[in-house]
Amino acid sequence: MAYEAILYDKHEHVAVVTLNRPERLNAISQAIREEVHAAVRAAQDDDEVRALIITGAGERGFCSGADLSGAAARQAAAGGAAAAQAQGDRLDEIGWVGRWARRFFYFDKPLIAAVNGIAAGAGMSMAMAADLRVGSEHSRFKSVFIERNFSPDSGLSYFLPRVIGYSRAADLIFTSRTVLADEAYRLGLLDRLVAHASLVEEAVKVAGEMTGWPPLALRMSKRVLQHNFEADFETAIKYESVGLGLARKATNDQRESLLAFTEKRKPKYTGA
Image 1 (cartoon, rainbow, N blue to C red):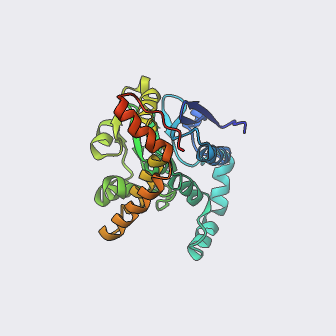
Image 2 (cartoon, helix red, strand yellow):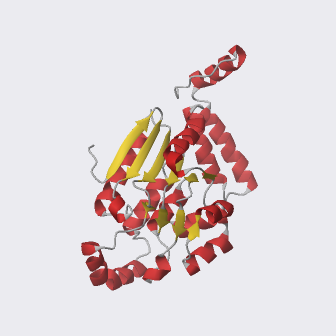
Image 3 (tube, one colour):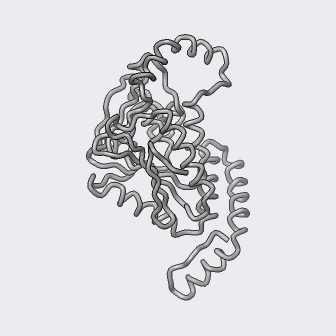
């Protein structure tokens, strides 16, 4: 499909989604929501894509969260109390923020956030939903929700403690303080810290380190890691066996792995 609010590019086996509203620090508009959903689904369905990078356009913003300007702000002010009551009464109704979190969590290929600026609110949630985060000296994180009289949404209460631990997550959510790049790297909000000028290039390199391996084994590795994060030991080793069995269905790649090793050459995997 043709995109207007985002950019979608491919670098061999790596897709890059760029939120393209730099004048609004890439705040999440309805158009961005719809197009990001479509782009992630396209990357999921494209067998040539083996990893996905999400970043923001411009020098200052990865994603500043939900767009609360103009019509969006008026709608929130008019309907916020009723919506909050309705959501409290119907916990199964997750709204767009829940669907936003689901889209990233259930993406079963490696997902990398290239954090080029402020990641706030639902933008911080999106970064935390990634498997890892590459940042630069411009990277900043801020939970924001409590400042808007909200509790965390868009998956932040799930993702953040799993990335940095409960007490550190509580610190960031309860104070809504800004975390700059160096501290973010120390806390584990960032996994790689690189020069801003080469941020996306470095993120593509990291993705390339992953996509050179057998595609099915890569996807099963993510599934096993996610599943076993909270599983007990016996369940974990059983699920590892399931993952091994599924990965070995790519018999051509298994054969290629052995041939490349014996012939001392770089393997070429197809996912078959």
